[in-house]
Length: 256
Length: 230
Ligand SMILES: Nc1ncnc2c1ncn2[C@@H]1O[C@H](COP(=O)(O)OP(=O)(O)O)[C@@H](O)[C@H]1O
Ligand SMILES: [Mg+2]
Image (cartoon, rainbow over all chains, first blue to last red; front, side):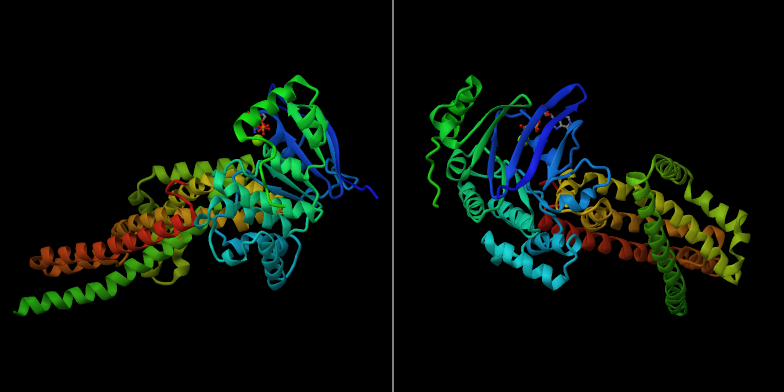
């Protein structure tokens, strides 16, 4: 019933002498939405890059549906195709039109024909409400539109889990809503997601569990209710207070 | 009157024989320079350390030797290597292609390497997280962008090579300058007219091309959000 999609087991990572991750462990179940938050520099991005092995950890293990990504026998390229990644600064392929950004994965990696890949891409674009913009180059699109293409690019691979690294923090405030709305939609459809974000409204709406990180360790975990009503640790209380001053209350309205 | 007609006839001959040789020499050298230069740049960026040294060494050597010296090396000292070309005319032509192409490769390699290095590392990360392997990511994502970024520099290289191809006259390649010199031996009085027209020809085949390609590429690159700042 409760299938583990991702298992992070005692992961450590240092850059030279700088310890960035110091023993991180958690599981992500099928259909679950995990929200990871914490101060800048606490290791959130590194954690996401460790999960899809763009940054292999020094110690510890990451499993995708029970299969270790650290296994020397594992075909990392193949396993990575099952893990979507949405970047803070979009990282769309600059020389490809929106539709080709989305179809190139299914075509090259999943081996679909050009037509099949195009159909898959079109459906993914519909999901993020960008189907009218397929023939535009990334540079011709707004940040919010680019990020929605980035989400479509992940969706088109039909991944087991999608990792989001602060997907709205590079956006102008008026563009954040359209991206969060798309993320809410796919969360409600049962997409398994690990989302690094400080959008507390989003967390409140769909997070099954929130993970508060600081200085490379998980300080506190709990449901959104837990964090918004009675967070335990001093650091979490402090940080949530700062967020509220910065971004407003968690009640921030998002249509659902 | 007689002389004016003579000048026009001569110019026509120079144009037909010389210009076609100049253009062939330029384009063939650029093409081979491009192929070799691309290979060198890929070795330098993606290759193991040994190949990187080969590439670095190559660039240093071929950028450090004057073109005229290279032309004498291939077109005189090593001319025997090119006897397969058939006639002497062909042999010196091939020798000139070697000199121009090998030198251009060194510059094109550096140009192309700079473009590869300037691609945002996020592009490679994104490609890998879609599940592409290194080879696919390089071939489908990095290199197409690097090629586009290189085009303005490449038109510049074209301008350099077409003008430098004139040095091939020194080893007897019958390009524009060689033809001009040949005729001025017989008609010294026409020298100024001939050389002026030749200057105009070089200019006509350099400036509009670099201007047009440069401008259209800059527009295209801006459309793609590549180069020229974010
Ligand atoms: N590639 C890297 N090389 C060296 N240091 C890095 C690298 N990536 C991240 N760091 C450092 O690791 C720490 C954690 O970074 P990061 O994971 O980006 O944190 P967060 O996403 O929580 O802001 C920071 O101090 C950052 O400077
Ligand atoms: Mg980060």
